[in-house]
Length: 190
Image (tube, rainbow, N blue to C red):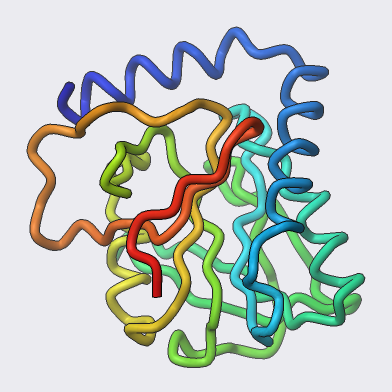
C-alpha cells in the first residue's frame, strides 16, 4: 500500500478504538519499552499525545522517564515551515493546546537537536524495514535529519507492521525500533 492508503486505513482503525482500549494498549507499549536497552541515555524526546487523533497516550512513558531521572524534551510546531523547536519539560513548563489540538510548551529552556539521545516517534503505520507513515507534513523527517546519526528512533504503534510501504522517499528517515502492545521490532540495530 502507498502512504495515502495506509494513512486512511490506520486513521479508521484508530477511530474505532475505545478509550479503554487506548489506555490498555498504551500501558502495554510502555511496559514493552521498560525492557529495552535504551535507558543509559540522558535526553529523551517524547511527543505529547493528540487525544482527538486517538494517539498512544504517552503519559505512562512520561512517568517512566521522570522516575528514571531522565531529561524529557517536548516540541512546539511551526506550521508555516513544518518544523519543530524543542524544549526541556520541567514542572514549571506551561503547556497549552495549539489550534490542531497538540499539547505544546509555552515556555522553557530550548534544547538543540544534537543533545537528544532517544526520540519516541508518533506514527500511523510502519513496515518490516522500519519505514513509517506519519500525518504527511514532514515534521519528524525534518527533525530527525537534524539529530545526531546515533540518535535512537523508536516508533510507537497500536498496530503491527505492514509488509511494505510503497514509494518511500529518500528524505524519509527509518526507525531503529518500533514498539506495539504485543511486540518490539528491531530494524537498524546500532
